[in-house]
Image (cartoon, rainbow over all chains, first blue to last red):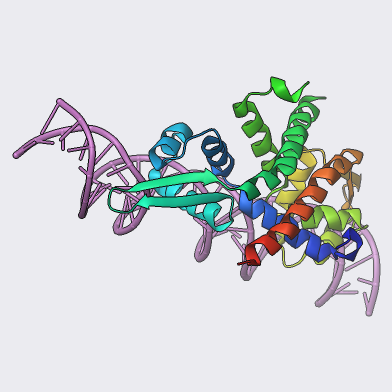
Length: 113
Length: 113
DNA sequence: CATATTGGTATCCTATAGGTTACTGATATC
DNA sequence: GATATCAGTAACCTATAGGATACCAATATG
């Protein structure tokens, strides 16, 4: 599908979708923690502190729904659950890199006179 | 400055900065309206409806503070004010394009089984 | 047998984003 | 002289994001 085929309203909608998936105070920090090897709920919690377990739980569900994180239950009784980032999650890299770049430049821009 | 010099915390901070500047329900629609030639407050308002004047006024101030929009007062008494997008605003294009691309693909991804 | 650890949930609270309606004071139009 | 238009502002309300604290049932550890 070509760029030219998108109307402005569609473009806005897609941008809002993207924002919805990755924005919020904790989404990126959580993804990074999992990506770095925190695979248990408790580990992620400790790594992303001071997030509350309530919010962490909710964010993990959102990320799972958006197929960025995979939740695997090994044993329901002994509560052995593991979180990993999905292969699809890597598709976010160019976007996140672009955001890092823009944010870094913007900070310079704003502090200028 | 090289990518490798950034710590994870710095990267997160820059991403949050970027999110803060462009997220919200109306920022992009407002920028697009101005970019398309709505330069008066009333015109932007009509174009971005159903935004309220209260929110529009606040968003324009934010965009101006972030140097994405330029507000020019031609005559204070007769309230002749013009809004234009700044040249700096164009620096957002690669990022927004990336968001459109990702959002479009994501919609497909999520609707898959 | 008591305590800690596991992955969460329940209840309640606060802060922020955004919405609604009404209004301003000046010029321009009918 | 009444009404519309201009660029907003003021006061108030609602909805959502996120925070605080306590708790659960099961297994593991002292």
